[in-house]
Image 1 (spheres, rainbow, N blue to C red):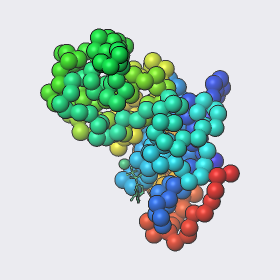
Image 2: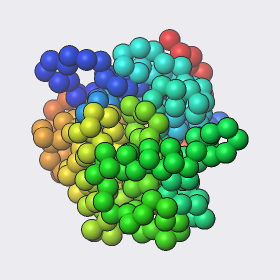
Image 3: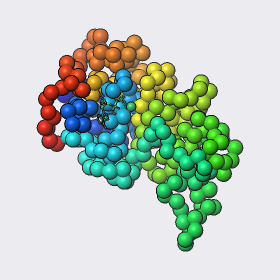
Amino acid sequence: MTQTVDERPTPTTAPALEVREGRKSFGAVHALRGVDITVRAGEVTALVGDNGAGKSTMIKCIAGIFPFDSGKVLVNGAPASIHGPGQASAAGIEVVYQDLALCDNLDIVHNMFLGREMKKGLRLNETAMETKAADVLASLSVRTVRSIRQQVASLSGGQRQTVAIARAVLWNSKIVILDEPTAALGVAQTEQVLQLVRRLADAGLAVLLISHNMNDVFEVADSINVLYLGQTAAQVRTSDSTRAEVIELITSGAPSTGEAVQPRRDRPATSTTTNGSRPE
Ligand SMILES: Nc1ncnc2c1ncn2[C@@H]1O[C@H](COP(=O)(O)OP(=O)(O)O)[C@@H](O)[C@H]1O
Ligand SMILES: [Mg+2]
């Protein structure tokens, strides 16, 4: 299945991340039935699709929460075997999940180093962590937090999202995956977070942005990958696409004209076939 239509004229370097023919079933539920995605460094790639299309499953597979049943994952053009979150981190992949997993009772610095604290002998190296946290926030031009020693409980939704994103960037990550970062935010905070998302890409990271919001997608994404019932309907350049075209892909799995994808008629939840395919 070659549904991906996002081919840049002269790609000089391999994409930071590629998935080819990714499949994943939960018992009889074929959540992913052939997904393809290309995520390039320096770009924001949006992953869109209706509820149940398979977006969360796809990022969990990429992040090693559970591996794909079959298919290929390539990192910088080389096949990668990601069978756990540790391997995803080692490959430079960090995910900011929707629940953010921040600890309200800790300050920003301690949240950014949660589980990966810097130590000096037996003690935490507070000075080094504080300096590094401040550097990362400054490098992302984050000016919305008053003090990095503030407890996370006192932060706004947008600020919490910022801390979670900065934490993901701290670990020498090359590929940052954001699951609906603006879903719970108001207009002004959404704008701040979108600007941060854009800066991540401008700083050279490969950003994969899961979103429901076409305004967000068209504001920051360079490329849009559409999932439809567990399959990739298309990946298009934002500059070559209209909202209507993307919405058509989301709702029907096929463009109104042009190279049509052939979405399978069976719905994932009711399919009776078993997916016994193995990695090629
Ligand atoms: N752990 C699971 N067990 C069984 N089915 C699941 C599980 N996770 C997701 N699914 C199913 O996989 C399909 C895709 O879900 P999901 O990846 O959450 O979609 P999205 O994030 O696009 O809304 C849905 O039909 C969902 O019910
Ligand atoms: Mg989801």
